[in-house]
Image 1: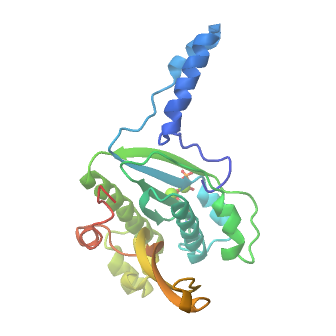
Image 2: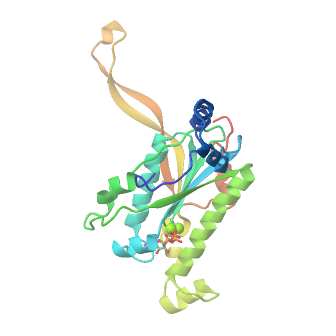
Image 3: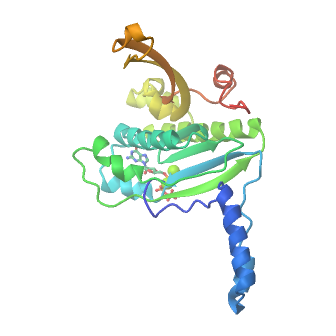
Length: 264
Ligand SMILES: Nc1nc2c(ncn2[C@@H]2O[C@H](COP(=O)(O)OP(=O)(O)OP(=O)(O)O)[C@@H](O)[C@H]2O)c(=O)[nH]1
Ligand SMILES: [Mg+2]
Ligand SMILES: [Mg+2]
């Protein structure tokens, strides 16, 4: 998705894979060969229907990539914004994604229960220069993807909570030290109040759809006496908005009931 040719997400979301399998079956009956047996190794990778489908992409050996491209430690806001830009682009292309969550070198995309499609993008490389102006891209990063299905709203919420907890733990660790009472040590020894660290670093990024009112001027044709006149027209548009809020706990889900709404 982020770098061409590196993503190995199986096409388990696509209804087309079923069609493809049918075609293969048809072809196979027409021309069977002694090699036919290898098809038995194919696992049925169709995702369970009616479940939430999560695709998580994670940078491969990103430790090296960050080092080679002089990323600021432990958090480089350019890198995080570049990831978010890519994820927003993906969401804008795939309206079936209801929410996405990103931190560090990973992004999770949650597809509607009814979804049946998926696409690839080479966004990360494409937008690199917008975020890392002075740092040339030395090699294209690779991202591996995995697909997991979650059967209930609660398991999906728990999945996203797990990723945000991971963001918190890693960030606290990377910002400071190994010891038990990290917050206290950060404050007393390094004079860093962890709670003052930017929210994007502590909470990661949540991408959701929000309706915005857009005012545009339009030439109005009717009625006849107003012909040629420009008028302000308001229309509602769905846009992808980044948030750096808590998704662990009920408050977020109560505030945004539409995300998990079956019919939306
Ligand atoms: N300096 C810096 N490094 C980052 C930043 N974001 C991610 N990284 C690096 O990316 C790594 C991501 O962790 P992992 O995904 O567990 O490790 P990985 O090196 O990508 O290895 P694999 O995922 O197993 O291939 C971190 O350990 C950091 O080294 C950042 O903003 N700044
Ligand atoms: Mg990684
Ligand atoms: Mg990672």
